[in-house]
Image 1: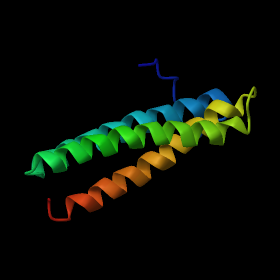
Image 2: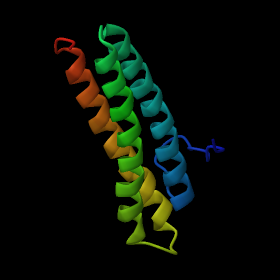
Image 3: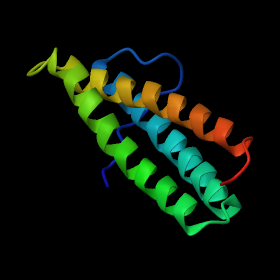
Length: 109
């Protein structure tokens, strides 16, 4: 848990504002991911399928963190590091949401 930085109306002009807006997008996307995963979980009829979904989600969260940490390390010590990390999480969240949505259209195991 963390306190969201503010996201000003219009185009953010400072690194803190850019980071804050990315944080707001991350929170919104994470809620969508959770809702989509919960819906998929409910659709799955087998314990194995449900277990695999839970494991997949946990592994994805760990991978997202590792990938985004690597992306932000390029700016280590600078004000762009948290912006790079947050923007990476937004990109990865969007990709995960699309992947989960595609799974929702597939038949359940």
